Length: 511
Image (cartoon, helix red, strand yellow):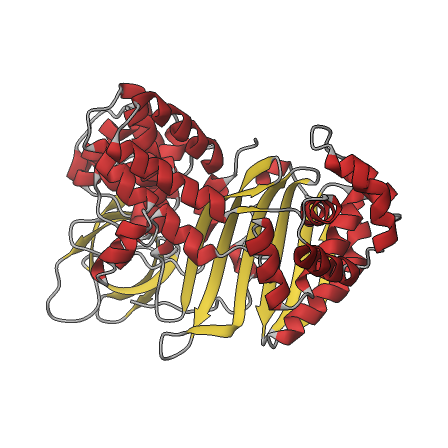
């Protein structure tokens, strides 16, 4: 199972509207852009152009180290000029001539280049943290995200933002922990975690359309099936364009459950002249067109997981993972949390138990990954929000993750503006492999860009485009274009699509 390029999302998720807060004691490497009367100037700091009061005369277009000073007289920040910034070494006035470790110097170079704030606290803590992790690049990215998002400089936050970049899939980690929990035997807390994992996996596991057809044909063929059920199945099969006389050929085959029939053999016997892939799409569309009462009957009588539309209940999946854990606590939804265990809450309780070292490490890693997702959601301002989600998904034997980044716009009331948004989906599919779907919504007009390296993708578009256009129209959206592109770089770079492409991003910041 391939890893997800979460690090590239972290590099881009904050670029919609970076808004680093200036606080007394911070030190920046910045560039002087303009000088005004009364010791005022325009300075470029952390990618922003800000107006500030300077405590010294400077030369235009030079780089300097600035220190933020307290100011109670006006709303403008006051910047003390320390020295010119011609290299990537900390200003001696504050830090002296200290010799930094290679890891710490690497961080200082990054922060200086990107004009992000540096404090003594940050330098003191980050040196220790970076020496304890396997990947310096991941550690630096975690620290940069803390600064850009104005998060407290603390080890739990650093660990969360570090582990959310883990290259193993979330599905793999859930399954590994589930297997490990079995070694504890009868353990109440471990059982609670196991139930929470099962809840998430069950919500992301859906029967394939061909499996549903196969199950209904088998039920129809068995001599033990009651007459009323057989009549209902027959009615549904006709709605799926399956001819009942063709089923009689399969009766002997289906009555022997020791030799299951393959998808290809099933289609051949039913005289469906399609490949299994196209037949899956065909029957999925047919199932989606059934009346809700028929779909409910299939779900109840045949014990198959059915959804009215080909979608996952993302809200329930996120709640099952525990990504709404703190919010549910605030809103007093304790009864729901007890009846339906959330993974993060169960993991926190598990860590309070006496665990083997390896299991404790797995549980801590999962908690950090889930908390990291929550921290990446906290990117709100008055008009724009950038969200990040990663959750497992199953389809037959295939197990993987879905990763998505949602850039949304808010109206003056702070509500989500449904007319504008952009969603990036990253998928590692069973046959199409690495795929990015870039969905852009402007004035309720939807354009899609599918990035994939396989030529076979194009053949599916005509059949699916018509259905997609119809379904979008039902909810008030209009499909504009569907484009297929090959990845311009290596597959691991697929998600490096700059947020600057978003047409509604323009927010001009001044301090």
